[in-house]
Length: 71
Image (cartoon, rainbow, N blue to C red; front, top):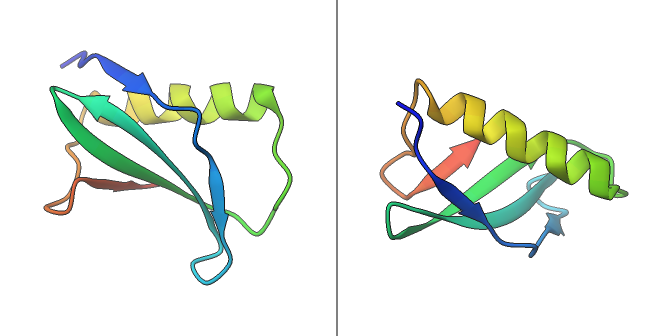
């Protein structure tokens, strides 16, 4: 389905959810992306890897009703 997504560089770690959260624009909608991990340190390379995984996931899936993606 090759959807265009623009990622924001607003990565924050949610201690309660044990997940990183960042946002993006998808078809004019703001979506929230959650990456489950207990690792509280991330590199720029890892951010790009996550973005690639989100794009790949979006090839076959859609965000949930709350415009969230959980990976």
